[in-house]
Length: 232
Image (cartoon, rainbow, N blue to C red; front, side):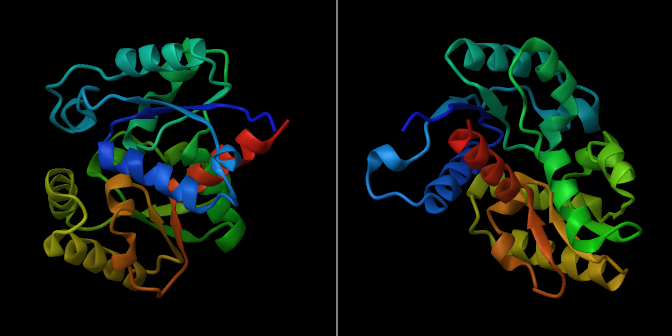
């Protein structure tokens, strides 16, 4: 069976890109190699730091690098693009302007899924990098869905947890504790749903308490890639 090929703008970070592949493998009903989904992956850990650009205001703009990656993936045969980094979706307009194939926008898709689960007027607890809030990555999508965001009170701790995971992988107990405590705080403030909106946090999403529904944006992207790959 012919499959559509999705191009992945990866490396932000590398382990999150591998996690996306693992979830695609686990979610595909395959009896042999040929049953799995084809991917083109640009694993580029040298994309300029989104945190340096958006939070510190010191780093170069990642947009042109991401646009170049998108063009290369399209030229290699990708019929759609995916990007397993929430913060990098701030640069989605630059990516989309560089290519003629669609970006499977996991921000838009995740908010749409949240809206189906909790409905208009509800509040979403955001487990994300402070850069996501500062750049307003989810603002427009949430507003269109009639949802509002709740953010962890101690953003510095969230950033520290992300840096721990980037350095040491999903093992550090401190990162798991920070994520669990942030989730408990958000549900205590009235979040009807938690959105795992950092692909580093996707690596430790099993640390979250099951008090309210949880959507992991990486799972949403995985579903979108599968639908596109198997579609007409």
